[in-house]
Amino acid sequence: MLFLMADRLRRHQNGDLALLDDIKMACIEDFTVHARALEEFVWGDPNPRYPADAFASDFFGGGEWETIRTNIQRSA
Image (cartoon, rainbow, N blue to C red; front, side, top):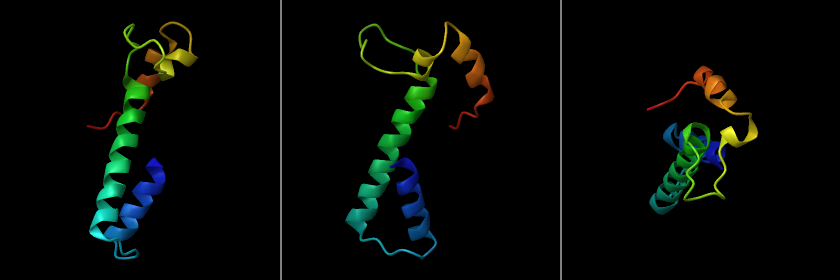
């Protein structure tokens, strides 16, 4: 959904796709929610208060993900 919404909004911005204002706002909201979830998955740290939450670090041994993610560009 993140990439689909990014593409849809890009096409709208370029004039290749007409979106009604309410649909455009829904696309922006959807993109934002998914971008935030992805950012938290990559950069977040597990919180014992929410043990069911998943993070990229869950798929690596202790400290391994923290080393790997230094190679990933973090956007503001």
